[in-house]
Image (cartoon, rainbow, N blue to C red; front, side, top):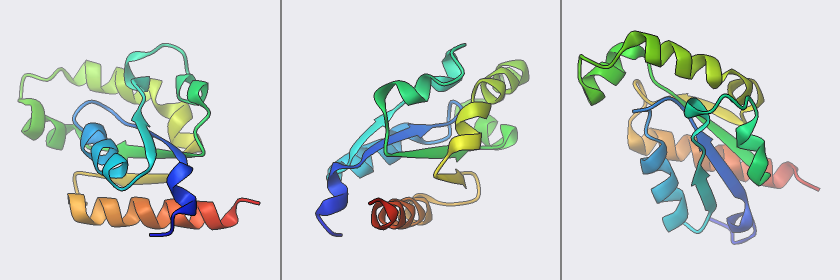
Length: 123
């Protein structure tokens, strides 16, 4: 990894149980200025923009996978509400990953590749 990209501000969004904390923790270990945005809990559609990220990573997870991770009593209506609140972030994401099908190693490889590509594309 080059040192230039390590100053990138990386916002990570997604519904509960998608793996935001895990991805942010790993990115921070690797020197990125990464943070999770509670967009799924906010009625402000572009809350993710408030900290001016250089890149936005959207982590997706299907409802059955969320139930496996959080329990079968997780309300479907809450999942749907979170997905609605995440729609603006999803449209503007640098990268979207379904963490229900991609393991952590694949997820991190795809995230870093996207961040390095975005870094090279910046003036």
